Amino acid sequence: MSDAILVERKGNVATVTLNRPHKLNALTKPLWQRLGDLLIELGADESLRCIVLRGAGGKAFSPGNDISEFETDRSNPEQAKAYGKLMHRTLQALRDCPVPTLALIEGICVGGGMEIAGLCDLRICGRSSRFGAPINRLGLVMAYPEIESLRDLVGEKRALEILLEGRIFGAEEAQDMGIVTRVVDDDAVESEAYATAERIADGAPLVARWHKKFLKRLRSAAPLSEAEFDEGFACYGTEDFGIGYRAFLAKEKPDFKGR
Image 1 (cartoon, rainbow, N blue to C red):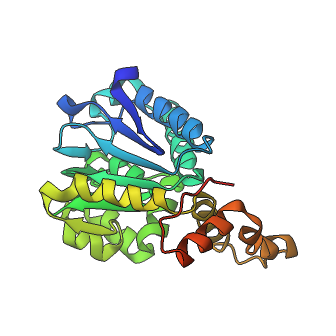
Image 2: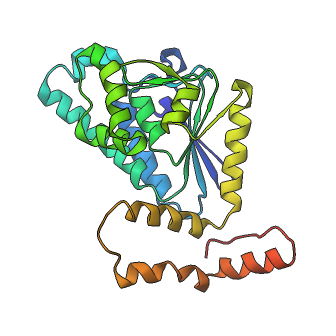
């Protein structure tokens, strides 16, 4: 199972690769488990500044769950609930990850693959990429934790359009919906994604984590506490603040420490 997901680290950027190219990186129960474990582990690494998620082979990010598991692992409500619990743990780990995440999308990104990519902070795809959630063809519903993520990504009306039609659509339409943040030529996806990851990594890492935290908190209508409000000024007490503004005045590239 360890080979079904590959992890590579270059400096402060980690790449997590779904590695089942012979199945277009279709998701399996063990793969969901391993991906969740990895996201929790990488999210706890304070030295990381960006996580890139991608599929192997260049033809697909992922087409969703491997249909061959349905008879063995999702053949009744009890099995499906256990499978769903595993999936939702992984999706929650991605949702809660404090490290900036970026989906590098080549080719097909459908169903569970689109759910994973959609929870990344940034999503870059090629012009020939394809998206959708045709689960109505399988007689399946998208459970509450998954449909909530889709609604938050594209809005309720768009989510209903995607689910009711079960249509596969292209990259430009996906960008219009908000499913992807950037569309580039197919042969530029990898270079653009890693250039983006480097730009993220070059920024102050504590600032990136704070921005993720603040935006997530603002989804709630509850008033900010005094402590939460004050956290918006905590950056001025960091070593990185001094590094950043002095480098700006000196017209130099800052070397942030994450402190």
